[in-house]
Length: 572
Ligand code: DON
Image 1: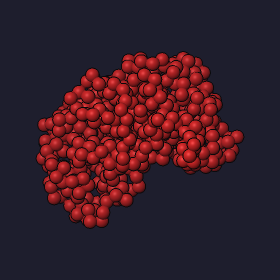
Image 2 (image 1 turned 90 degrees about the horizontal axis):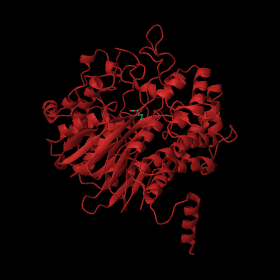
Image 3 (image 1 turned 90 degrees about the vertical axis):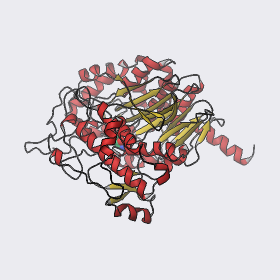
């Protein structure tokens, strides 16, 4: 064995990577594969999903295994204590979605976060036990499995149990949270400290094996008892006890009553492609369709990727779609009159686009809403994309809301709880220009789901998936997904280039554009700002994970955003 081969062999043994499979691919050159592929924010989770595909599982089977594996290897966003969305498009042309967004507990109320003066009390919508929504992930994966899975449930949960039991190398990405937990003294953090720190006190160094025995036990209950292994019995009892002890309001009954739902996708058309998106309570599908419909009349290819003219048009459509998002969209079970059909229609897009001037920015007008107040959102969530040997595709984005969610963990459970309640509009009717919306579709109510920006999307051609895409990033998610789709369809970029290209974000209010600081030349910015667009520089925007299926050769090309720490493509 040569020296190089020997090193590769050692790496593959340590990371359990078979050398005939792809792994860890990031950057501009997408990784090709013929049959199945998973792209996620953690290479080990991608491999867990790919192994399911190799064993004859379908895309939904692999998505379930990947989601559970991420709950172990990517604790910042992978989860069983949070919620999210799955979009499915089969090679047979059928499509559907699963909504497993968290719900407000029974005891929640519209003004639950406010003090007597109408001010938010102690940031309680984002921090502490009241910020936790009833988790949906396990119910969603269970439902998707019941409808579309083919392999035994227990086999799909198994890789995650093993990763938690046997451990995996702790990552650089986790160093900050380890120091955070080390500093926490309150009993409410006791379980998280025990799970994340060596002996409950010391930092794991990057690369050191990290085992999670309590999480393994929680996952085993799910493996053996399915949905009930989470929402009933020991896990539910541990969650309820923790909530009671620390002033939370989620009860065992809230957990037992949680239901995921199967929803009809948002379906639209753009330059001959079908766009399959997530309906409300995601705002992503509607907003993407609205923007693509407006963009269809422009020759974006001629403008060129990220030219000032192109950025101007993008900004104008973003502004308009985000204004509608704020005004109209919330949980459909509580907002029966949302004008979705109108918002995604070509006629409406034409009307909206008619006010776009080619040389001048318009202004974001908040007058219609009184003073505006947009809820704060963080930058952590995770997306993964799956394609199986038959060409079926699954696009999943799920989240704990903030990075590591509420950072709370019920004793004995081993998994972090979300702080998704912060995605509701906390102050009824109150709004401000700094950036938030307090409109009624998204106010807190018992059993209601909070509005989301997560935008798992599948693009199809002639009834077959050609692009599976999504990203984290709070409200920037929608614009990240939009720009990747345009890079593929309008600018003919490969999957890697489409993801790596610098991105911008405008969300109507505040009326400014954020631009990835490293990615735009001063000349471009000057031309762009001269049209009346104030801009601010930011770090990275999102971590897109995508698969492109060449419609002719059927080769799958995967790319994990190099903006991610540990993302990876696994294919065969
Ligand atoms: O559902 C939402 O829109 C947010 N809770 C997602 C949060 C998020 O993406 C944070 N970052 N990456």
